[in-house]
Image 1 (cartoon, helix red, strand yellow):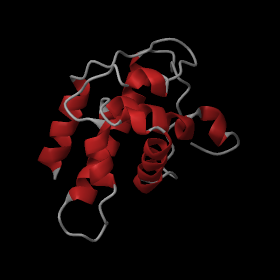
Image 2 (tube, rainbow, N blue to C red):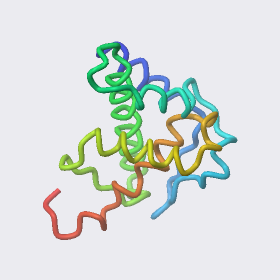
Image 3 (cartoon, rainbow, N blue to C red):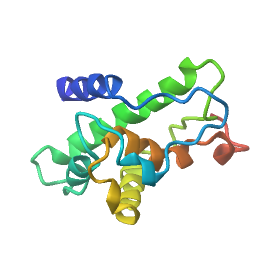
Length: 140
């Protein structure tokens, strides 16, 4: 499982989705996501994430691994900029299943992004849940 997760993380790091290093940057709109490319497209991850948790075929676990790697990279890019470009505040109170459902919900509303880079679509789906102001008053 670790090898699969590392493969996804390295693939994400090599993707051509440019980081946005300016304060309160928003991820690309759904209409522009079709222009992004990566090793894995959003439709492939959607298939993994739609798999039953108890199916025993590893697809559900691969979904969670891809999501974890993508979100970790999103947060890392935010911190690398030195100014917390998107005002992201990762919170351990949010589970990977929360992000899995957010991704699936986003895909349902935006089916046109199925061929876009999965990491870019996950960025768009996850960012609202990671905004610092969402956790106002909570201990991070």
